[in-house]
Amino acid sequence: MIGSMKETGAKHFPHDPSARGYSVAYRADQVNFCPGCGRTHWYVGRVSAECGFCATALPLVEATTRGTGCHARSTHRAPLAA
Image 1 (cartoon, one colour):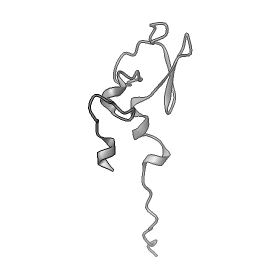
Image 2 (spheres, helix red, strand yellow):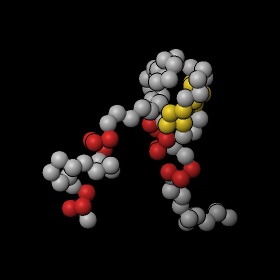
Image 3 (tube, helix red, strand yellow):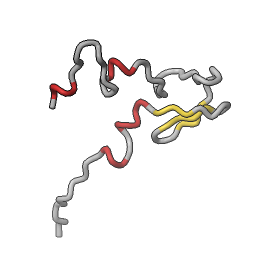
Image 4 (cartoon, one colour):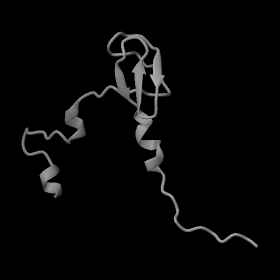
């Protein structure tokens, strides 16, 4: 399995992160300039941010660490004290 994921010669595979190039994403701790119009006004949602002027949408960097599916729930509950 791992052999199929390695590079062979000068050939790069699309799942190789180093071969994908720069990926534009919204970062909550920085000033984000829109790649479409260059402005900095954003409407931020749960998984994406949208430019307030030209409606360019960017994924949130933190989107994988937030949300309902990211937290494991315990199915075991402690009995209530009487």
